[in-house]
Length: 279
Ligand code: 8Y4
Image 1 (cartoon, rainbow, N blue to C red):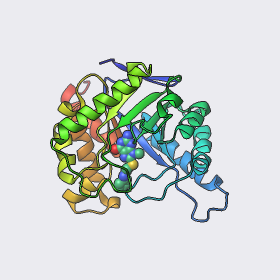
Image 2 (cartoon, rainbow, N blue to C red):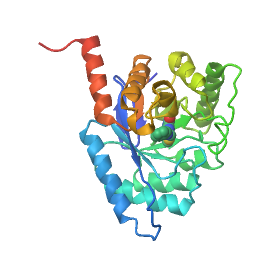
Image 3 (cartoon, rainbow, N blue to C red):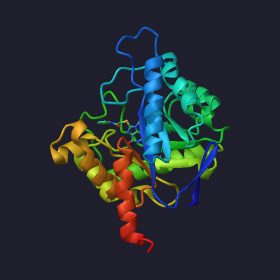
């Protein structure tokens, strides 16, 4: 595997685990076209996450929770583009969480450095929208579609099936002319998986991911944490940090998290244990 990820304007070293901070661009409660407030909030949140140690930011304008409302291209662009512009000079790569080719194109033009597609670049036109740029591409596994994916997900061998899906996805990108140093793979925790599937994937992360491409994992506050701790989404910090560290210890390269400061603390302590501390 390469030691750098090509990520638009940046080359990210993959020597230590990187922390990707989540910036949600949530809708106004009154959808009156006055989106300034949400933009400013999202930009301020992104800057705070960088201050806390985020190595990159993931900006999302489309809710991907099970059963969430679909968002039109125009609405998604209204949410996301002003935030890309507002964070353009923030000093870290900007990832855009989208499945829509039109949003991918516009985001790359606006200066996005990575496209994070939970749909795995399967919407027609998605690969064409990103191939001729330098942006990083995160290709994630999902079984089914967001609306129905949690209705009795079933696998013969979840590790083998996710591994094969990711290998085929990377092949599709490579066959379209995407260089290997732009590709990141993600097993897609919570996307068409039971709690047992999710923990099997995390436990066997090296077998799932192989060693050809870097990995990105998103565990933060997810129901797999709630299932084990019995806690609601707003009280899953300890569980989420433990899960992120378990992933890092199994070789994950990028950790997608809400709680950047606490995750960075955990990684620093782990690094001190492993590497020692300068006298
Ligand atoms: C509470 C808060 C409960 C958030 C659930 C959630 C991933 C991702 C998401 C991921 C990649 C989420 C956009 C789901 N998860 N992208 N996106 N990998 N690459 N749920 O695991 O955070 S959204």
